[in-house]
Length: 238
Image 1 (cartoon, rainbow, N blue to C red):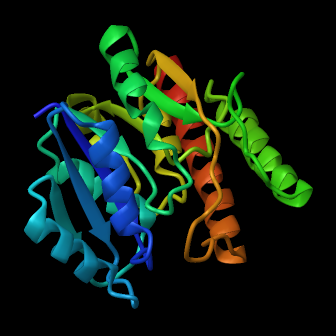
Image 2 (cartoon, one colour):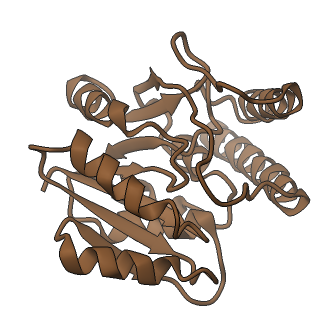
């Protein structure tokens, strides 16, 4: 199997049918699977996903019960994947699936990690308010300054890599991190990274999960990754 698309979900029952339809359209002719990893959503997203899976052999479902963590959802999905390539994509329909074939093609050329980016030429955040643009800019600059990751959009939740590369860094990943892309990129030093532009679409249904708790989790993640990087540099020097 060539491609596994992992979509972590929480209260995305209204968005899920359309997400699957769009993926079926853009990946027609490609060998692929979609793994919905749901954190036991109160709106029973997992149940909607299971109904779709009974009629669509491309769709698999993992229902996680207990602690909720976006990072662990992605890690669990990538671990269960059967594809040679693993992609992470939100279920809220803000990530444009039409660039997926181009992302896969780029990975096959020379890249190790391909990121769907809002901040390279051709990318856009569409109708965001200036306050949200500022928040995103600050979060992006923090990641670039503190960790030094050479990605224009390190906050992206839309990316793919070879599953073998994921397995190599698997044991070093912390699933409690707010942005799993940061975890993966920080543990792939020297990786060839490519960013593919896309327009970040408006959410169709549901609510954003951004909160003070999420902001604190992000700052904590940057602090941890920064110290881990310093420790590695120190160890290499000695």
